[in-house]
Image (cartoon, rainbow, N blue to C red; front, top):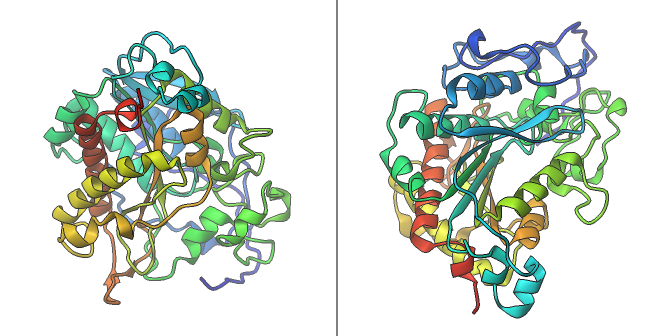
Length: 409
């Protein structure tokens, strides 16, 4: 993606828009206000006209939704961000009771995974999280609508999802974290980006940030600046927390960030079988939702292959891939391989199969394998998010959890 050069332009105040109208915007819900970055080019702050009500993506919008719409699930603050903002999860069902007799590492060494999970080894525990990168909105919207389905049977458009409801009813414990990197999301002053054709410059700026002369910090170049000195940027983007750390590439064995520590403590307590980590970064030349193969224990490869087939088949049959042919779209050999990151750390911390799902963006178009332009509407993006959740939940129900995938004796 080409660099963009812009001159400084003044904006005195940056205002965050809220989801489902102002009725879900509660004062004091989201912690301290984000620092204003007045040199963001004014054109970059344009939003799409008439955003749909189901597009709930801001910190205050999500907080208002959790406060006003969640009744069956329990809203729990699992930690605070580097900037002091609460990280909220919604939890359903019953946790594993009792503890095992060994550590996860000990269970691997003994070939006795049940000794780690404890007497409730056979329970199924599912965790979905979004916005580890604060400028990526699709996963937030997807999880808010998933919560609506779990609460009412319908998404915020009024569409029923009976297969999600049925699968969720067979999962013992379900945990949803709509915004992990609350600092990064609070910093990005948009609810929904204006559509920019095939130019992803502004979406990348909002995520990876820009240097003082307006050049994109860029991806993957942003990964060589951890921590990022945010005082040396025109705008630091939504990737880092307020300490300048990209949580996907934290110092996992050293001085961890509070967001990472909160996730690790939650994972140690809940011992999830499956974690979905929702991002916005689908490949530009195959611009459809895609699951990435994690760097994880080899013993989890069959489970990942089965999960990939299930999710990508569901997307293909729903008309949300380049073709409707599962033999092509759901072949695990096609899964792009990820790198060592947060998902690897979560796997080796608690044994979960933790995978990234990359969505296309609402802000710009990409290509299909034949070179044709693909624009993903807000409705299609939400459909894809919910199909991913539906098929992943069904897979966990049908395949069992970690103790069955790789339990040993």
